[in-house]
Picture 1 (tube, rainbow, N blue to C red):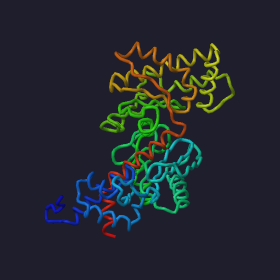
Picture 2 (picture 1 turned 120 degrees about the vertical axis):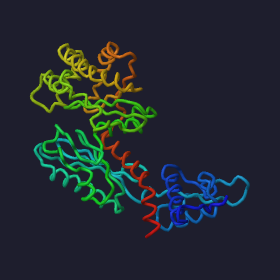
Picture 3 (picture 1 turned 90 degrees about the vertical axis):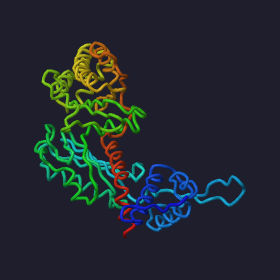
Picture 4 (picture 1 turned 60 degrees about the vertical axis):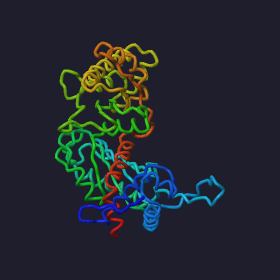
Length: 382
């Protein structure tokens, strides 16, 4: 095949960058391939592919990955793979109590975790500095560069990475989250609502694997909803899509406190007391069962409104109360049958790790894919 094509201005260097980027994306997402296989997949000639592979081996982004089995008895062909150990990705979750960090290699395989507790009244600078410190420490331990980071936070975030509204974290509104983290850590950063990242995590590796349209319901000391449409977080025009708890008629703001109050225990954090209430309900305590049913009904009223609006294929219940969520499944489904034309399946989360940081790393991997052309141009010009 002839690879000589004419770009505007005859810029063959730009064509080489484009072809290199295509090849990198294929190997970034897939397994090892030979030069012949890469030529077939990309439509490029073998000499062109071999030249690109040779250049990428020099940068350290590709590495030999064994030999393919010979089908004709000839010499086995060398396979090449993207070196996913060449850098790391970071997922960060901000919450009232502190910051949580998940570090992975470029394939998404976890390599480190971190947590920094913070007082509830910590200011934005303290929170940002804490996140940057934890990420920086973990990256330094790996001795490879940080390629991309995604941060999740409660509230409403606009498309430029600015927190517009945050009732959960004091003083958080107005923070240029993406810009602040990028300045501190020197890498590309995206920012996403925490529940949307949890929904992405469920879609990629959790209970909703293979389901691209879903609602994720976070059941913690606050209730929240993440929306995934076509496999991507759905934010709406202003970033407020899914903020059903804002509706004063649903009672979502009071529901966690009421569930916690039924635990009959000494004062505990709401999520711990709520867990105790649901545990007692599962063991037949009538007062706890009544509280769980009331909580489930309130939850289902909000979920039902979202189902009528976006018509998802699956509802995933996650968050700190999900481990005892079997106490909620039947009453939620029963109430949804009264509200919806068709009730989607309701499942409990399948993730044992923090869903938000898992989803954040997945979003960081997407960011690397998007930036592959720019990264390739930089590599080829160095």
